[in-house]
Length: 379
Image (cartoon, rainbow, N blue to C red; front, side, top):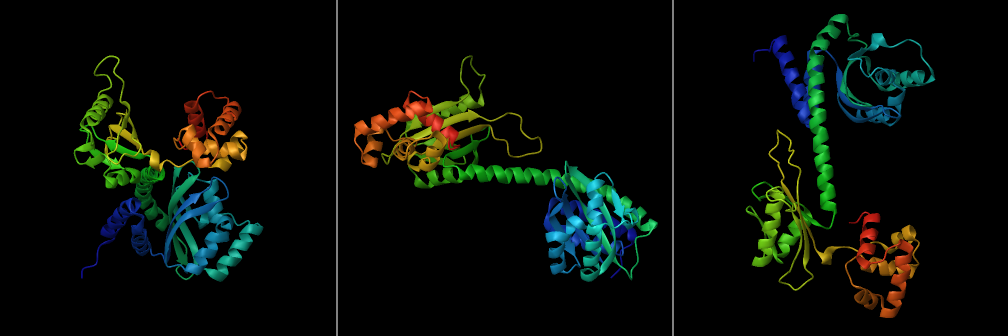
């Protein structure tokens, strides 16, 4: 097997940086190759949150004892003079032992005492990038006392690598932030009880949350397919397609609204769906295959949970009886059915509703329900 030249190994490590920035699972391989290239005995990739008490929410390493690393992360990292230097110098690209002062305060002494007992490496060189306000990321190279410290020539070579590290971290941070936002958004879309369906400009379904998939599996008057969303009854489906067309072309005709709302009956005879159709911003991300144009929100009255009575009581100052009635009303029940469910007379329910109106400064039941759901964040 022919050994690779130093130039080839350097190019390979640069490639490793970009690969690992896109896929965090590749950092151990990148660190191993970087350590081999720089004659280091250990290496780590880290993210430093310096917005408050310094902490390392991400710390990937090779050739360190796991127990020692846990001790480091659980208490010693904020005392580490290198970490403290990084916090104080976020724009410093390369940090090494020669930049640290010899003045040792109580925290530094505690750290060095622990380090001498627990960690075999002695010398360190760090390359970092400030990826956001209060957030730094980078790699650290470690050498044992026997191997010796990092010389000026080592720092010079690492500086050439560092330019690519900075770019890779910037790319990885942006893509990671987008993935995190996407995951967060999807989790919240799935957390709600309403079905959410996104359509592209050709009316094709490109996203459906869990509630929408459940409605589809129930086969109760609504169907999702590659061609789009359809309702069982022809007249209602025609209206839905008209609303979708309006949402796609909000300026096609003067005075034509962009989308709208409707109700859709169900073959099972259950309460009809409520459907809201609206346009999605036309400003899509350039490099993306995901281009939603229309959002369709479908509510199933049978799946809408009641607002918790104890929260209504705390927020609006209701009595327990008033809170229970208000909670029933938020499910879409009319006053008479709510009275039957609570086993009270219709007259008693009307009296309690009057008190609820007074305490919420509302006059109509629809206005009241809107206030209750909006205040509790369930609308």
